[in-house]
Length: 265
Image 1: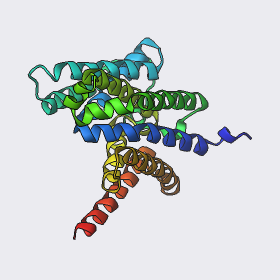
Image 2 (image 1 turned 135 degrees about the vertical axis):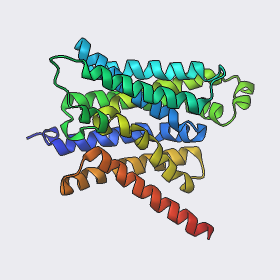
Image 3 (image 1 turned 60 degrees about the vertical axis):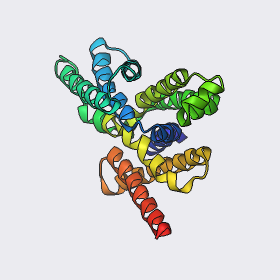
């Protein structure tokens, strides 16, 4: 028996990988106040799943392409007279609805819709691990390369222009990274819970971080710990794994909020 023969080991590696990639992205989304952006991109990916199944191609590839298209569309329209929150709300729910309707038209294809909506981390295989960690490596490499520029563009577009940084280019880099995380996270937490894994660890880490880098590291720790603890609790109590992981992260956020209120009191 080899190390990866255990489905729990594969699930743990998948959960930790997604958490490590989602943490710094979640911090950037929190700083930009773009919570709906991650939600819209995640919801759109179900349409990519339907198209991939209809064309008999890779689900990861279909989800990635549609997530990229959604993110690019939102980025393009946001500066043309559309309120960002309204635009994201309309596109997120429309894309999810279109994807679910498209899935219903698939003939001769057996699909476990709940696995795509809420994740099926216990079914992660060796090939899935390669895809997940490959995507994680690309995302972390991209953020390591562009971190300073993306952070500057996030905190102050005017300062970014003065430093010779194009904020739109950095937003594009963030968009690509977000689409990759959404595509690799579908198997782990599902379309409906991806935004939660992006935002909750970052929000929980915020009160304890003095620097952006420290916040990203603390968020990564919270995300990875939530994945491992959620997996263990799901195994013990026979609960859905993806939602259990998010519940653990939410519990950490609640504790962080209580500690913060206690300090202020």
